Image (cartoon, rainbow over all chains, first blue to last red; front, top):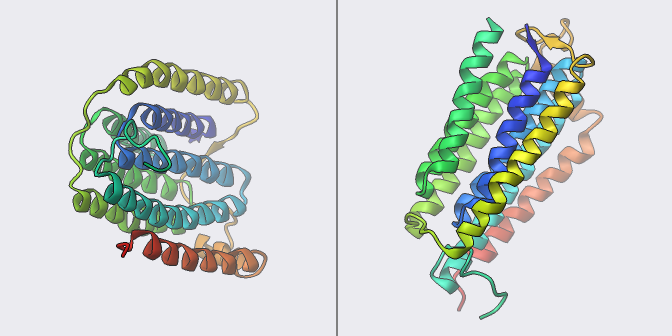
Length: 100
Length: 168
């Protein structure tokens, strides 16, 4: 027996670590990785609530989040590759202009 | 039994996330995220979502993380260096994340009475198993969104090819 609140607090911890990593990290790829961490934390709350209410809809939500995350990763990493090709850097402090 | 599973794999997920935050090399962060995703897959399984546990391993820690590691190695990303921006980010990031965590856990703990506790395994409905239930929902009620996601994937593939192409 595990209270649902424990799962939610674990998800909150993962989400806040994701936010901290998103704000602290200076590498574009690591920032992207922390977005994936936040998506995973939200997925955990969806699954926990789906279990609590005995409903499958929450799991359907997680399925769609996974599909969108896969699409987002493909496009985002392509953008990172094209940024690296034009700027020769991955540091977000140096990527602050739309066109240079 | 479930509490032991939760503690072990919750601690593993938390440790992986903290390692992601503390490591300075992107490849270490990516591999710690794999640890987080695998332990979350175990937690999904213990919450009765067997299909999602398998999809988590195959799609997230399989496909998406391979893509990340591939790009890190392709771009030869090195250790990040400290800059003026990173000091400002420390000053904002740590308190901001702590504030959001306090807010979320305050809400969850104050609503604790309304939240029930969960037993191990799937008890969504004991008559059918989890995959049958998910697929019945996905292919009847949610058929249109399901088909739209296939178009989304197609657009994403085309967009990735166009964006990563070498310009003439």
